Image (cartoon, rainbow, N blue to C red; front, top):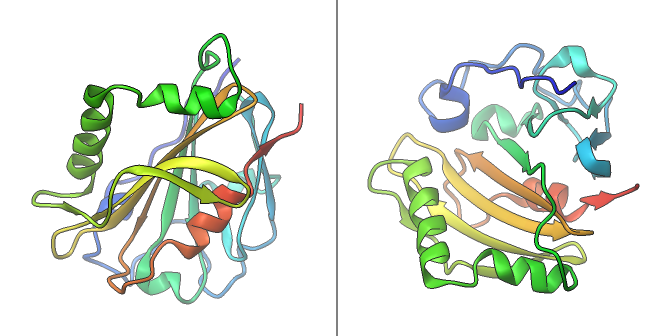
Length: 200
């Protein structure tokens, strides 16, 4: 039986208004680094960067099976300022019927309409008056290709990294948010996504 994801207040995912606040269990300074590997549903496995953990501290075993949505939070000292979070999304059905993972990934955004919809959704999820930091297209995280785009948020909101890939015919999507305003962003998130694999 699948478990419904536990939800917390939306400010952590969207806003950079109160950087001194934390989510329950986010002990700044790396104390949350006990869990380094997370098991997702459908055989997915990811390696957490140091200081990252499942949002719910009660799930310290790193077992997030039975869920289609998994939230990860960063508890390092630098994240006390950037408030980085990532939300991973799975789909119940496989992607397509034929072809390898590259062909299936291409099929996700084969039409101009699907690409436009993805871009508009990313901008809307970021903030009013958000802009793109680059083109929407294929990039490599680790050894795997992802479709991804970065957004620039309006002041006091989090910028985003929106990405999706296909592994062994299964979809894995991600939305990562940060208060970082420098040129280099989402380094830990890219490492996290680059570690994604299936172990079935």
